[in-house]
Length: 543
Image (cartoon, rainbow, N blue to C red):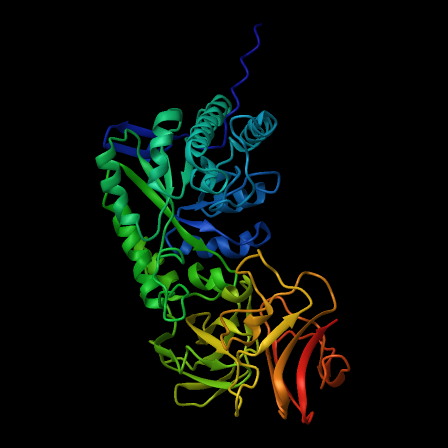
């Protein structure tokens, strides 16, 4: 008797296709139309079980990631268990933004390309039959990022070579997995001509776009593209798109403006039927830092107005939700000249739509001082009338201050303004102003220099003396005659001395120490008060 044929194994994964024709495309999953209603995914894989049900409750059907590897399976499992699919990303240099991630020569670096051509299909083969996979996304913002690796004709060559390499990867992925589409993300529609010319094997295009998201349709129509697209990041205007405020740093939108930005972005995504196949809005993240406050829907796990705006845009009901406090009229008194270490006042009108009792916190960011995006708690007093007395940082520069208002129901309102920390005023006459100054060394050609000794006594805090990078430097000022004084004010730049002495001399040869500070001067400035009597010159000796 002949043996019965063994039934073919049935893959658990869906068949996802881009179907239709020019201007009348749709994405289908197992033959049914599918519009990407998504968010970019921020929490760790370990937190997926905690947050994925919440993502589902927002009306989300898709999340987007930037990397796929051996750690991805639990995320795919949890997504699939909640009826959510994943746009699974693969990272290529320079990715994530202009110039980040290093520079690769896509014309000559065959070792890197061969590694990626082996690595990416390996994970496609691993996960191609997983129910959680929607499509594969190769690279992120590298066409833009290459501008920080080269310029001119070399840049054009690299962009052509990069997008040609993306096409090689797309073909490899299709060979391994013909059941899921392949796309590639960049930060601007200006990258699309390179994909059109060099990457015909992509099934659709993808773009990250914030303030310009509503211009995508006209760009597509005017340029004669013949593939549909998805928006893989979108939302309110970014730091790079807003005007500077009075202190010269980007003016962050308010919570209300951010929420409106998400609604507007989704409206414009929907306004291109048959071509736009949906979006993953940025960002379902929990980080509570500079970037997290700007973009995250739930920093530190607390929901914002933007969270509810996305939920409403995707068609999920918000009728029974307790919603966040709203902060209006946020202002900082004398924001262009806040004395270091002194108290300044800020004010706001904070209301809660549900009448919840509110708690407040004040935080600082030194993002524009030293690039540190973390937030630190500030010392403050809540005056109970919508105003707050806040102790300023000691470090000179432009800072950000944040008012956080929470309702005890898992919601938060956050507003932020910049303020400029300046040296405290000192009574009396600046005896060193314009006097002859000398130093052990000075920097002649580093950033912002030359920085000679004279810059320390020119009366401007926008210029500086900078020594060479070696210990035990000094600067001295000749006051011209025996002079009595009782204050010395030092304003440190970002690079500063961990210890110093102040000395006086009648003849420029014999010196008397009148003040010593060996502490770590994290505050970057100090006012030393003493009475040295008659003196002629004062060097600051830096160990």
